[in-house]
Length: 322
Image (cartoon, rainbow, N blue to C red):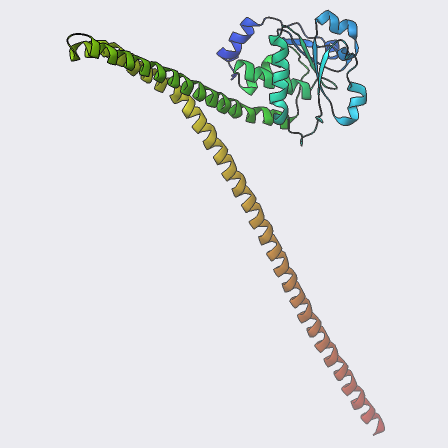
């Protein structure tokens, strides 16, 4: 992770390996920039210019566009390039993580075959840089901050939406968990190979002990190096798989904690909502009762005042007759 004192050692190592930064100029935002060797990111304009694409040596084009943009961003030269279109809007409700595996395979497969890839969206500012940042994370092992810093150092105008940045951050433990599972599978495969080798060695040792002279002495002398090798291999396997298991457990624990917090948050919201409803209902009931009481008091006062007026009238009438 980059710090206030400079870039992280991992990012510095990658910067030393890939020295393709250029001095940024405002007009470069309409062009495509090379991020990793053979991998370019930019706006839609270069994808419309055959001579530009050919000058960059582009063979594959990954277009990130929503449905209403596809009449503009549709494949323009399908006879010259291999296209992959992903329907993603530049909006907070869009799930980028679901397309990361497919976009990674498209980019990595093209580069592995000696091709060169252009990744673009509309302006080359939010969606396509987020996709390229995810590729850099998975390919180099950098954190999302370092991977984004690496991309931005080559295309200064990039600014993915905050929600896309959060998805890149969330993608990091997914990468680690996937790598842990892969490492665990490789370790188990290695154990199976070593186990088969140990069984073969045991068969050979049995043959030596039965056919040679000296009986048990020959068997023990022959088996001892094999046992040492197996014990050493088992220790190495344990050391190699322990971090993978730790990473897998950590990822599972993280997912569990996130799920628990989400469930707790939902329960809190529901409780708060229900409490607010009850409070509003009680307040309405109290207000109704108070209104009825005030109405009754006003009516009683009115009736009393009317009675007093009538009584006073009768009194005056009686005095007038006298």
